[in-house]
Length: 345
Image (cartoon, rainbow, N blue to C red; front, side, top):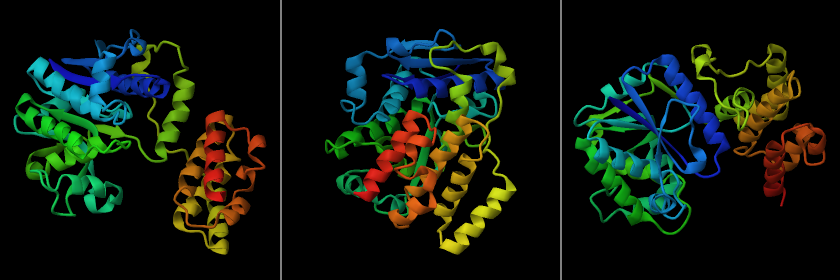
């Protein structure tokens, strides 16, 4: 029996929506010979989905996450635990994933000596915020001496029991670099460091599983708010009709308008895309569409080098004084308010 596993704990309504879509996409692709485990606390069990709950006691979760400072590290602990318990290959999935092929094909890539990951994700040299972690492991067997060392996307982490030592090495490295600060990317850093000497044994799952990141997460989440209302059970019989989620189209007229505005006002590429998203937000036929595009616009602005005063003029309907009239969801309005507070203070 092939084993897939997810981990969802704490107050996690968004993760539960993601889990619903991911599991339904697995059902749509075919679950023959595949068991899905859900490592969770009591509040996050899902009797409406074809998953087997595996309770994670609070003390164990605290240990797995460095007392809550490294939530993603729990997935590495879960993988090591399941490899030890099952004695067979296991794939631990991030919830923000969707299957495009049979889940069993993932397990078939976790042969002896193989580690399965979602995809490549750049290089250590592009992660300046990891510098203190790189320094902390310089006197260990996982010293990163090559700034061209690869970083890997851990949306999928699959291994056979023969690889459990690599997973444990990655876990132990987290304790070595721990400095009591929040460790958002520690799972990715530690696994990438532990795999430096095993690059030839890494396989990837990007052709079997989609992971939505960046601004596309807003597109998925906007659809999920309609598809999976909080507290409502999921009808798994509808799995075969599960829609593929793609980037919403931007009308040609708005693309031309955004391009002309960007040329006249000297907007950088990211800010120009943010302006297009802004135009799409206020042309969207539904409040859900407006909210999605407004979130995408904000993602672009967060990396913009344009002066905040000019951005307020560019994005007038989302400027601080106009936000109450923008008809955004409370969480989206709060994101914008926080953004303006940060850049204008």
